[in-house]
Structure formats: C-alpha cells, structure tokens
Length: 180
Image 1 (spheres, rainbow, N blue to C red):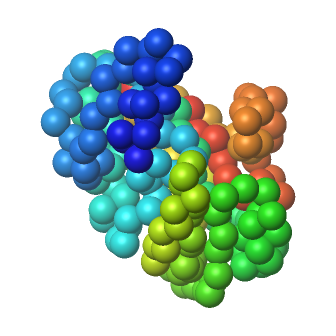
Image 2: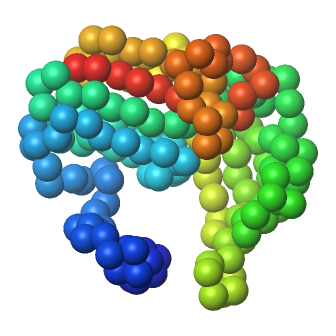
Image 3: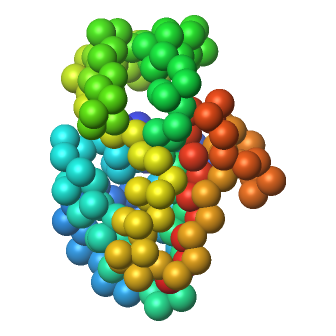
C-alpha cells in the first residue's frame, strides 16, 4: 500500500516521506508537536490490550513536551446498545471493505471478524481481525498514565470531525484529543 501511496503522491506533485514502522516500537523520541491516528491506523487493532498500550506509549514518547495527540478509536458504548455485526453488514455497501463472521465478546470488548479489503486495482485481501472497543474512562486512564494532562473525547462522524459532537451510544467511533 505504501508503493501505491507514493504513486498517488507523485501524480499530485507532492513530496511525502512515507515510512513503515511497527507502532508498538517506534524510533521517535520528543520529535513531534502533533501525532494523528485516524480510522484505527494501529490502535486498537492489536491482539492484546498490552500491545495497544505500547502504541499509545510510543506515540506519547514521540511527542514534544506540549505535544498533542488526535486519534479515533472504536467506541465501547456502541456495542452496548447495537449489534456490531449488523452495523458492519450495513457498512459493507458503502465502500471496498466487507465484514463477515463477526463475534463480539462483551467480557473483553473485542470484535473478531474476517474483513475483506479491495485495493485500487481490484485485488482482494482477507484479514482475520481482532478489534478492541474502548469506553471513555479507559481511554482517559490510559492517556493519564502516559502523562497527558488534557483529554477530550467526542463523537466521531466520518469525514466531519468536530468538537461540537458529544459522544453518544450512537457513535461507532470516538474522537480523542489529548495534550501533554
């Protein structure tokens, strides 16, 4: 996918330094004013909560003293009121991703599913997914343990993120804005 991103950037005359790293083991230290993780770019897709925490820990370490982290994650309030399986089935009509064999575990707040992704060239790839849903109090605790001082959580409307959207049980994802 990085090669395809490079091709697209080149057609737009953009010079972007694309890098591939394991988010659980980033090499950056006190380098950035801002980190952005949208659409579950790594967090919360790891097999264990400890691995997900490593991602947040590495991002926190990569930020400067007054740095800011903006990310979206799966909203744990959503599956308390809705079927994740039904939601994913309805989302299948909207793009090049399909979901099947969803199983949501209320004890771990994890959804296990098989996701099929189609790239720009029509190639399909099947992924066995293990996705963790978080409730706001968990996110707040995780970020406070990493010395973030100000933590705001909002509802995440795809393509229309706003601080005006209060998080509700209707939001599949939450938008988190945290400052060190």
